[in-house]
Length: 308
Ligand SMILES: Cc1cc2nc3c(=O)[nH]c(=O)nc-3n(C[C@H](O)[C@H](O)[C@H](O)COP(=O)(O)OP(=O)(O)OC[C@H]3O[C@@H](n4cnc5c(N)ncnc54)[C@H](O)[C@@H]3O)c2cc1C
Image (cartoon, protein in one colour):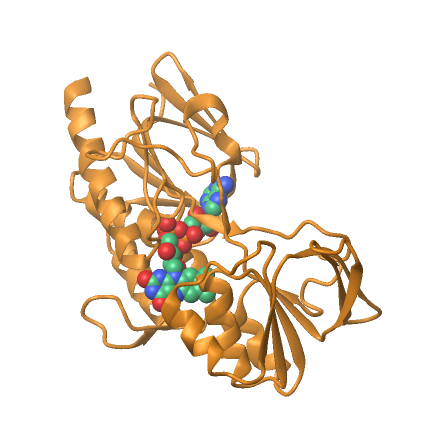
């Protein structure tokens, strides 16, 4: 008889781990596949102050607690990167980069999101040598230096506020005519003398020798190319949901987030559910990801009962 799982969860962040804990209680044949357990917070030394029950806990510590809880459950864990999901004759076929194949009656996609890249020359070359996507992880390395934050939304402003306290000067570059951060963040930035906002700035190239030395941007008002001397560049232009393996099984919105129906978090393909940062939604947090993981696992169980 074929080894078909009842449920395979793709992703091991807060959403996937919570889905795993809930699904394991349903006594079903269950596997969780993840590139690595922990997700976005797995290796980040950020302080979490908004997860119920913990006044302040580091991201790494919280994730460790999640992992320990998961590992006490009856669940198979597979380290791997899913590269394809297909549905054939009512069964999902999941292929990993490590050339393994798995079959399942249902799937929960909880593969989260990666930072959206700038896509300019020099960006990839200088990752880890001045280009960063995580201010809280890499910011302290730029103590006393000049840095640029690309993106004038809340993420960019919060990054700039953090950096302004340790660096000499922070530039915020915003592509549009006006920044998009909320009033509170704008007021906080307004009070910091070493933050300068440049609007209508289109980043064009990152230059340097061993480390980043400058950012070339186009002033969209005058079309003039300008050089900004900077030691570090923090890219804060949003996240890219990790969904490349899904093909036509789901619909996406304009931000490439998976569209799900509200009640059960099911995608347009029956038996395929999605939870966490990968989904449509403005508020992407640990607690919301966990909530969606729980919801998707309970909905999957209802779906499986109806299959019998
Ligand atoms: C610097 C930083 C600070 C933050 N601070 C807070 C905070 O203070 N409070 C808060 O509530 N939230 C915070 N967040 C947001 C929070 O981390 C996310 O909302 C949450 O991690 C989303 O969980 P998730 O499970 O949906 O996705 P993720 O955490 O992104 O997990 C995705 C999982 O999927 C796996 N994966 C991805 N692609 C594949 C694939 N193809 N195959 C197999 N596995 C795959 C990954 O390895 C990972 O295990 C912060 C985020 C960052 C980056």
